[in-house]
Length: 130
Image 1 (cartoon, rainbow, N blue to C red):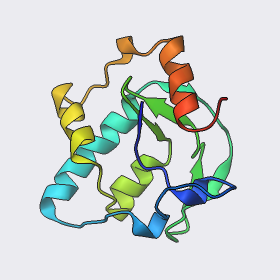
Image 2 (cartoon, one colour):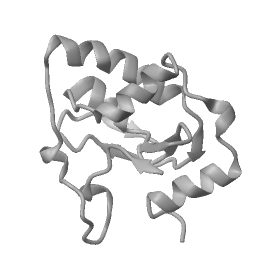
Image 3 (cartoon, rainbow, N blue to C red):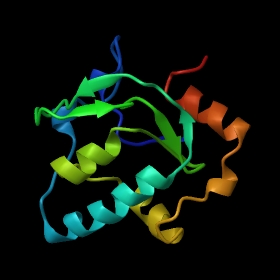
Image 4 (cartoon, helix red, strand yellow):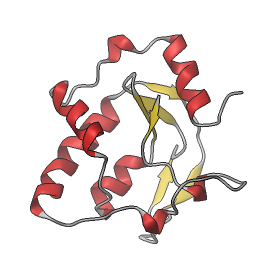
């Protein structure tokens, strides 16, 4: 399973991930168009783990994000609940391969492909399950 949008600030110990400020950001018209499409896709995917905590945005906009570490998947990719915030509000770009997958499914996550085994794989991929 492929992870998207994970940064080292999300983990207590050292991990080989970029920091939140190292993520590629853009305000191009093309990225803004993709962002609206992506935010809808991210929110429509099945949640595989729900967490009820609230954290402030790591990029300093002051917004509190509820359930930010909840996990979502489309069966191939896994992301946190706060990814939509960073994509929509802060211009964080997504990997081309992930955007292509979204387009492949016409912006509608393949929810029928997500079952308990896929949920466990998503949790293992993010270090939430041993």
